[in-house]
Length: 292
Image 1 (tube, rainbow, N blue to C red):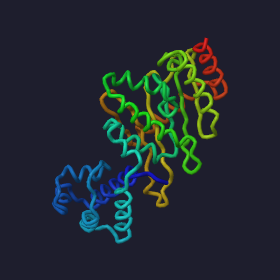
Image 2 (cartoon, helix red, strand yellow; image 1 turned 90 degrees about the vertical axis):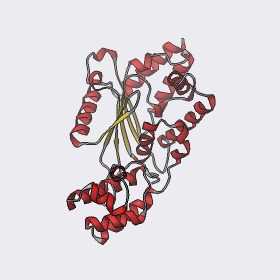
Image 3 (cartoon, one colour; image 1 turned 30 degrees about the vertical axis):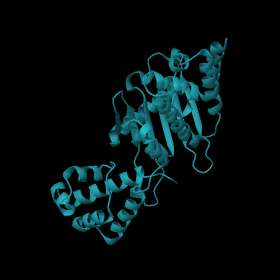
């Protein structure tokens, strides 16, 4: 599986942090050992983009008292982390806070998403997405819009990938189905596309109808729960992450209790939603209204 640098970098960071903590070594000692600033140690341990050198990782392993076997595992992760995912070529078209999400999305094997305002990006048709981009960035150049469109298409490839498909489960409020983005014809086409994609074996789309009244999504807000495949070495498996997007940035929640709260909320949202067949029928009814 091609995960690019995001996942191995995060795995490496967590291993380095645990080794240092278990050895009772401070960041000040760690930074002195490889002649870097404290910020660099923090970025390494939190899986942020940072220059990773084999000599530094090996030296830290020595300082932390890591076994030879553990050292080789970390050096292997370092080699993987130096690779580049395909999305890095679109760095100019990815908002800073979204770069990490794209990398995690490519590494994940399951996404569980609740959307209250818009159709999820992985399910948007080009005309719908273009209108959303223009609303967000009214003064952006056309060339950048097209770069963002290309990125979106590449992300959507995993829905139909034979070698590395992603399992996508979406719960949608009825509101984004009725909110006109672009022309009525665009909305009709978008909703028709939504019903077709929802028929894929790895995609589930369920709608919380307006008639449901008060439901958990009104309090929780839009989020995506990302889950990752098991690593051959069990403790290296990346734990689930909840992505909460904001207007000026994003939150990546990883603490067990936080993730569990969102998982519970998603379970309750599914109880409020129509089943897949009923959801498809409602989406098609709304599509016909736009098509009249």
